[in-house]
Amino acid sequence: MISTTVCNRSVRQVSAIVVISILLALSVNALRPGGIPLVKDWSVKARMVDESGLDMGISLDDSVRAFEDGHAVFLDARSLSEYAQGHIKGARLLPFEELDEYVIDATADLSPEALIITYCDGEACMLSHDLALYLKDFGFERVYVLTNGWSLWVDNGLPVEQGSTLPQEGGQG
Amino acid sequence: MNMKVLYHASRLMLGGIFIYASIHKIIYPASFADAVFNYQILPGALINLTALILPWLELVAGILLVLDVWMPGAVTIVTGLLLAFSCALAFNMVRGLDIACGCFTTSSTEDEMTVLTVLRDSSLLVVSLFLMYWTFIREPQQALAGDIITDRNPGSDKGEVFEDRISEKSREENP
Picture 1 (spheres, rainbow over the protein chains, first blue to last red):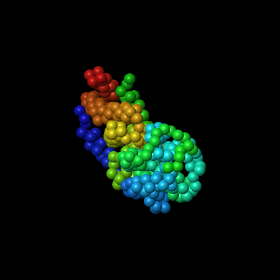
Picture 2 (picture 1 turned 180 degrees about the vertical axis):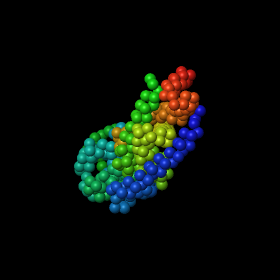
Picture 3 (picture 1 turned 180 degrees about the horizontal axis):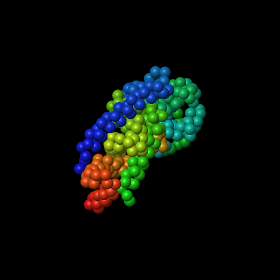
Picture 4 (picture 1 turned 90 degrees about the horizontal axis):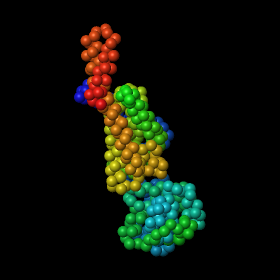
C-alpha cells in the first residue's frame, strides 16, 4: 500500500521544489541580460508590432488592392512543400526555416522601398511575422504581414497557383 | 536484474534527461515562450511565466533525481510534468497542429513533433511511474520489514540479511 508518511513528505517536498524553482526563475530572469517580461501580450495585434512599435499588420482588403495594382511582392514564409501545394498567385517562396538558402534569390531584385507582404497559414503562425522582422532588419522599409494569409486568400476565392517555381522565377504579384 | 540497480539506473537516466532538457530553455527563454505559445493551450497571460518557471522546475527536479535527494517530491514533479507534456503533445497531434515540440531545444526545425515524440514521452512516463512505485510503495514496505526484523533482533547485524531475504521473498510474490 502507498505509505502515508511518504505521501505527506511528498506534498511538502513538491511545494518546496515549486517555490525554489519559481524563486530561481524569477531572480535569474530579473538579473540576467535578455530577461523576458513576466506577462506579455500574445494577441495577434500585439504580435504584429515591430521593434520600433509600428503595426506591421495589413488587412485582406489592402492586400488585395496591392495585389491587383501589381505594386506588392508577396512572400510565402511556409515550407517548400506547402508552397508547392498552393500559394498566392505570383508569390515568391521564402521559407522562414530556410532563410539562408532562399533569401538572396527571393529578394535580390527588390529595392529597399518595395512593398512586401509576407504570409503563412493560421492565426497563430509566426513565420510571416518573423520573416517580416528579419526583412526589416535586412533593410526593407515597407514590409507588412497578412495574418492567416493563405487561408484568408483561399476562403475568399482569390487567385492562387500551384507548383514550386524557383524564387527568382516567381513573378511580381 | 536487481530491482535496486534498476531504480538507480532509472533515476539517473530520468534526472539526466530532465537536466539536459532544461538547459536550452533556460538560456533562451524568449524562444521557449514562442514554443509554449505555439502549443495554443495556455492563455496569453500565462505563457511567459510558464516559459520561465517550467525549465527551472525540470532542472531542480532533475538534479534531485540524480542526487537521490527528496525523491518523493522530485518523482511526483517529474511524473506530473511528463503527464502534462504527453497530454499536450497528444492533444496537438490529434487536432493536427503542425508545431515544434520544444522538448529538448527551442528551435522550431530541429525538434519537430511526431508520433515518435509522443512515444518517447510515454516511455519516459513508464520509467517515472516505476520510480513512483519504488518510492511510494516498495521502499516504505522494505523499510517497514527491516524495522520489524531489527526490532526482533536488537543489536544484531543480521537485520540487513533478513531485510534482503524479505525483499527477495516479496519479489517472488510480486514479480
